[in-house]
Image (cartoon, rainbow over all chains, first blue to last red; front, side, top):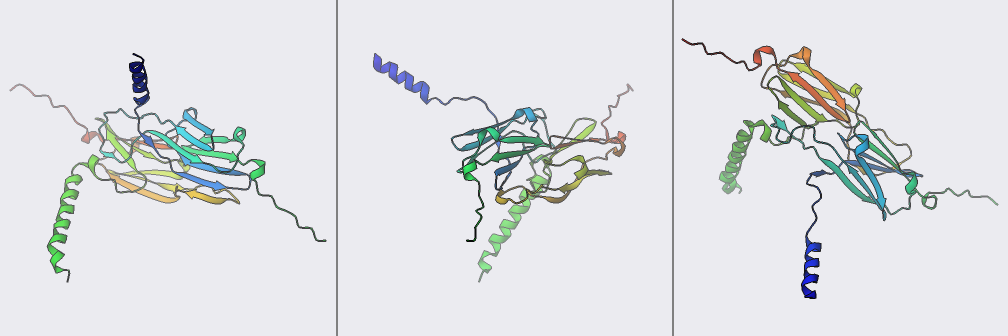
Length: 131
Length: 141
């Protein structure tokens, strides 16, 4: 009796959960590093400011942006060269950062993320004293 | 030495042409040429609509030109450079671009509207009056 109960439980765990059926696109990203911060610039055309989620967990920075469909799903095209869908990308950061001070700006479909480095990770210039 | 391959190469050539001819007739299936910007074009009875993804650009950076049955989107993308920084990754490109498309009908140039929002350019291209579908009443004989 108890055996069947366990089997059933396992079955439910093994069934993948389908939350949302949608196409994900990988945004193009530029990353630069200055003395104080990492700056991520990503192209997310069609994304409005309220529809973007930035999260940082266990050293992984995640960009999750929603682009709403702009045409009917069954639209016939004369030319169709790109698809419209959500943008998703993750980056692993090995440098300690200040999570509370991550700054995100979105303008004209271009995301700019400023991720400040922790004090310990900044380069410090040491003055050499002449004796 | 390579003469034995000639018939094979000819066959490859012919196959390529066959595919090109086939896709040429169906614009929606034409393989994407890689031209920038990528566009989606669709139509209703009165207008054609062109949409292109142009992130990071303002209306000052983009020009839309219409002549006859052709529409051109051209402009320049400038990517703001961060001072005193070292690159980790550089996937986006900058510079000038221009792309011209020919539609299957004449465009009413005076009534073209272009909007840019969240990095998406949308151009409404009305068909000229004489190109619109007209309903012909069948008169009794």
